Image 1: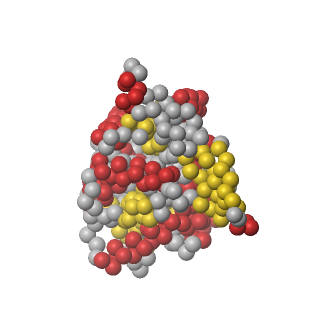
Image 2: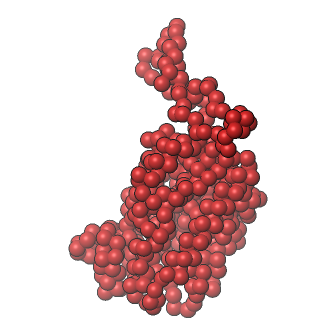
Image 3: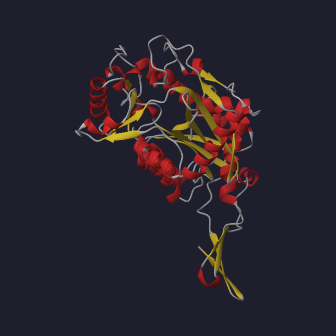
Length: 411
């Protein structure tokens, strides 16, 4: 199968990340070393995905999406049979992540991971929290402070609080200064979010307790398995720092505290706690519409053992040291087999022959691909070409079943 691994142009995103140097207490004059490390990590991840798919027999290529015209031209020219979607932003904007997935849909190209609606929902943290709360799923108490809005709404929350941009991911906007313990620090941090990110500030109660990450992997187009549960432990955190996994911990290998130091998988927890976490995570995955794979971050409040969902991550990182891959390996999988499982679930979803929908008055329709076959590689070599030409847009037969008759429409 022809699979295109599509990623965003990382330097466009990193160019906006200098907020970290301007945040209080970080003390870094420049961030170029971190930018270079992040770019190298992403390149290694993409090449690993490509090699894993190629080893499984797929014709896998990579493409870096730098602008809309270039991405459209690539999709129109090469017509991949599946896109392995690795875009978590576009032209430097996380808010456009969902638009890339929507573009695949407009081109009628199957792709891995969550759909556009889910990506947009989960990037909007307050909206995601509202959806979870509507389904009875606990998230930390919160308020959203719009630009230039009075902070009085935050008065109903109890300190300590954590302040985040309302619509960013990858811990962008989160460092030691994000945890505040009084009104003065709260006002300062909210103004920082307004200034640096030009968006509302999400203010949440900080949940004291153990932190866990639960990764999910689809075992069928409609069913998830919860992989080995991991813990984010803070016993190696330098004294005086808040127990959070901030931006530098995730992305700077030279930081004094890193994700590699914090992640423990599998977590040392009893069966009852595992059951509680699994139940919540599977419920979350269903309610927000995760597909193929994802990760849910949680805390269990130490005072009463209540499980709180901190964040839901669609299409999480797939590099060797990430939390998701640690969970996959602890569940008996290899990195390579996990990549192939993700692709296989997407392929199964789009090739499901039971795609029949009930219509009024006893009318049903079924979509099925036209049986015309693309030229094989052997045929292409016989013609003297280096590789098969991309096949044209596939025709599709639409069988409309009326009482006593079937009408076949080619389109």
